[in-house]
Length: 474
Figure 1 (cartoon, rainbow, N blue to C red):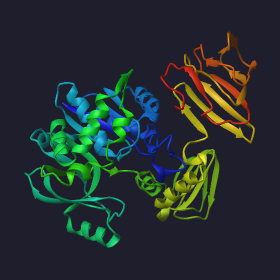
Figure 2 (figure 1 turned 45 degrees about the vertical axis):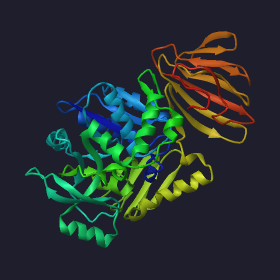
Figure 3 (figure 1 turned 30 degrees about the horizontal axis):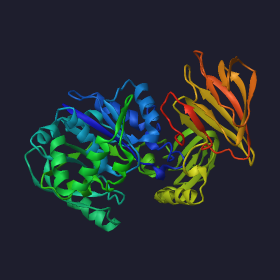
Figure 4 (figure 1 turned 90 degrees about the vertical axis):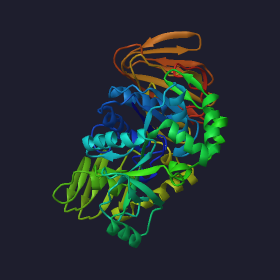
């Protein structure tokens, strides 16, 4: 049996402003109606002899992972929550240890949650072929047969073939090359792109991890042993996981082991690491343009335009990326989109919220959209799903006015509880415990007007929360 391990970490900064730290690219529908995470789960779920996936993600993203998988009918075996990012080797280590704790020793198919694979059937056939080698103890890495001298990927040099299947020993891993070196790699035919996808038996990986990175194994084992199960989540121990070195699978194991082999893949793979990569995998019109949303394009060529909330018009431009969201607009030359990360770095350095989250912020109970904000007030549109509720809470620095737009609200305010319907309103004074519940069968929409000396989301004192969130958690 093969157990997919879906790695749903990372912040996708090169796809800003659509991808944000609080809502990274794996949760976005970038190529079709499904998000990248959903496509990854559906892609492997269609194969035979595939078990329910293990998902490893940042604990802040746990509700998005659960909700997106539920929406496509995927029930993960477990969602393992990292208290902080520690790269791929620790993430895979805790997944392998968890799998072994169940008393079995499955093959683990390691998959980043944010890749595009056009040929799903071809990929599943390659996994079935690679499983034969993994069962024999090899650590398989999937190498993408290069189609261009790409400088944005690491490469794998193939050594001697194992058999007629095309699987070869790994001679070496190499870092991202310059243009001339990448051209030479392409010409030689001996190199493939490093996809970051792997297949191996759990015990085989753990044995090599113990040989070459024992500190990672020890810290991962401690974080798992001291963690806790809660609902469908496995919370890793923060102190134990913080002690874990930040290393990739490649650096920790694959570059050192003599058990690494590479299987070549030609399945229309792309890691969608930039806006230009998304343009490459998308369906372009006769002028080479890709447009999403409300876009008017006049005499424009080879351009990617994504309009999320407003009309965007281009006239006489070429080779551009234009991405519009409710709170930010990116205009970049398509051949310099790798530098978008510098924009995010500047936003974070100046502590601007656009570097971390969107104007619309998702919560396990629904979402809120910050419509307007000034020094002493903020206006939000809030949607609460049927049967859901916010936590029982209070604020030290702000008062709130609620106006029901649609649906029915049950308001708990201090010792009283009452219902509000469309066009009715109420007031929550500073320091008063309160809760908002949707008891109906349709979404509850309200307008919230906050006023006070401080309006930050960290001014929440929680008394009780059905989603298990504590103070300081979103």
